[in-house]
Length: 66
Length: 299
Image (cartoon, rainbow over all chains, first blue to last red; front, side, top):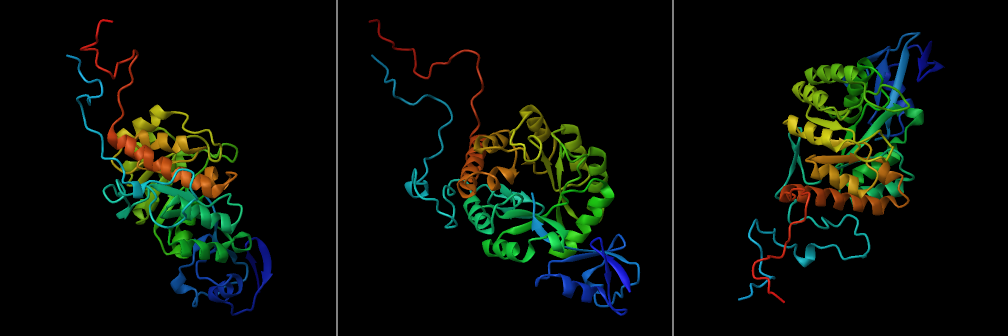
């Protein structure tokens, strides 16, 4: 299925979950957050939240900032 | 009989001098991370209470603009800070793992910001995401009006602050130096009000000291001077005006020697705080002799 991840159209497996996405995208630490269609996906639901075709996802991580 | 001109004048006594072991050797090497350099007199006795926590350092450091992770670590250690701001960005553009490693090693607490948000909706969502990512309900709330001035949008800011407080966030609100807006933010339940001295990254210092002092006098929550600091004297002035702490980033991270400037800022904040506590003398139009005129010989 096609979803949009951080502004880029991306193909994912039909049964992909938010947890799968985080595992693929995060660079080895847990301090990541995910927004799906403009809402926060709580960490506790990452493994059970299945993605749907057309979803718009933001996968965010810390960076330097004032 | 001549009165000894060296005799102390009447009035409040001076605080005891610092023990020599507490003094920073003049011109000595920067001692990064081996405890307070000039702390003893005030650190323990003058804790900084913020959001239900207690800190000994009154300097908050932003990480934006830092040239390298080595420079970041040296600056964080030299500054003595215990609270460091970070931002949230798309993973491809983030510097996460290595930066977090450095900050974790320094033992500082992370304060996520909502930098770049233009509306209350964006800021609230960013704060919720930061809570997920960092596991903290503390947030430096920043809602800017445009990207040229980076000045806060008062209307969106207050709206976001009210929503986040209602959701249980500990909100540290970056705001203009408007005393009335500061009071509205404090009334809304913000844990701290953080007025700018001048625009972010401008290094213009505190453009309206009168407003900062008025804002300080008008709220019961901590006031943190945030943005505009250019050099150490600006940080000292903020504390002399009554601010409880100073938050700065560019002044250190973009200095030619970030580590040295971090130490300068630490000492400036400490000096300004001590001066505030000690109570400055009133300004006078004319001179007031410190040597007594009584007993002046006729020569």
